[in-house]
View 1 (cartoon, rainbow, N blue to C red):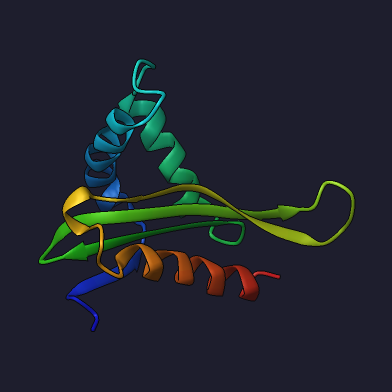
View 2: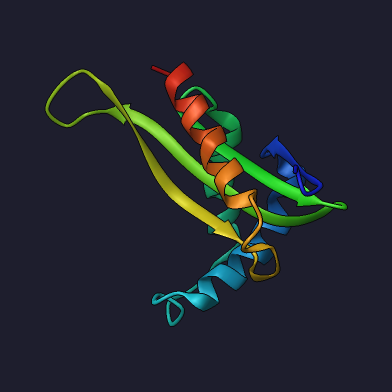
Length: 117
């Protein structure tokens, strides 16, 4: 059922793997002609480590290899005081698509979002 995936909150030790898998994601998308900068990506990921009250980053691994990640945050709704949750990045490696990993990453974000307000 669990398909052998282990989910964990992102930490600095994950950054290089997320950068590498992110490059694959970048290459699949409409923005692939745009720059993909290591320093910028690492600074972006550091925000998720430094501000866990508002930022959520999770990775999914199988046998130690990074297979997917999810980044999101909570912020006040534009027109009121309620908080809303927003997905920023959500990616599962092609070899792991069709598994439950993507759903598990999303459900983890949803649970965290409810706890965050």
